[in-house]
Amino acid sequence: MKRILTIFSVILALMFIVACGNKPATADQVKDGKTSTDSTNSNKSVAVVYSTGGKGDKSFNDSTFRGLEKAKKELGITYSEYEPKDPNSEAKDALTRFAEEGQYDLIIAVGYTMQDAVTAVADAFPEQKFAIIDSVVNGKPNVASITFKEEEGSFLVGALAAMMDKTGTIGFVGADNSDLIAKFFAGYAQGARYVKPDIKVIPVTIGGTSAFNDQASAKAKTETLIQQGADVVYHAAGASGLGVFQAVKEKNIYGIGVDSNQDGLYPGNILTSMMKYVDNAVFDEIKTTLNGKFAAKVQTYGIKEDGIGTTNFEFTKDKIGEENIKKLEQIKQDIKSGKIVVKPKI
Image (cartoon, rainbow, N blue to C red):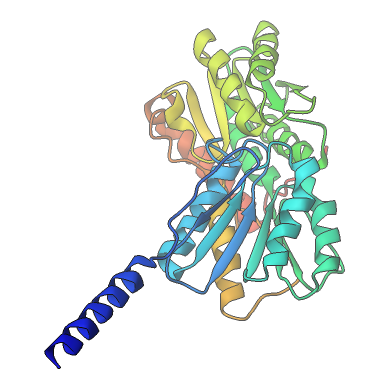
């Protein structure tokens, strides 16, 4: 009898060891066109396909990532990521693979270049909820569109650029000639001319197949602007903006960041950054979806909605001066109240 009990105990012990060995999968983070999964014990899942440059761009994608991390911490979600080398060619396949898995409460597409891909995949998977950032997909009951009034934040930094300008010329580096980038330039030029009507605002475009991730070209374009007299340069070019800042630092003029807080990259040379709170928008959309209130509508974030703004001038407050900061705050309030209306095109 004792022998039988001993054998039975050994069998139970082996079963316990095997059971303990079946642990949940750990995170598998892979870049450059591969999927990574952040796994915890939760049934609430979100997937995201990033834009050009992926995480680490210090800009648009990083802001999206912060929104996911906030949702993970506060809402208990898990999320899967895809960082494409070329969103134009990879987006549809990446979105389709996530949709086929059928486990995600929401799939997020980052960037206007994915509009066609989202439209096609949303048609193929009508029960799957999607959200696209920086573009509008109309007529799809399973797609939420998130847009921003970039022109309003750009108006603020344009006004600041004019306040700090000494040469009568400022510059703008845009990734491409899209309608989205045109909004950044339109606001920047209007803000500068609001403060200094005769100021010269020179725009240049990076272009090419890697417009948002071409630091060398961005640096060269910025150097051309500086040669033409620009002493403040604002960029709307994603990871390419790092090249803008290199030129700004070398020539010791002012730069202005975009989307995320880039002030600390070159403290003192970067006046401020036009903050586009993609992180807040991503978090809000995830929370709304999990609460069963997903809506296929366009949600637009501007200054009034606390979706756009500037940094707090951590490294340049003394250079800008209290008087200029007060002027900028008044301009912000005038935009918020509707006293100043910023046009998305000029």
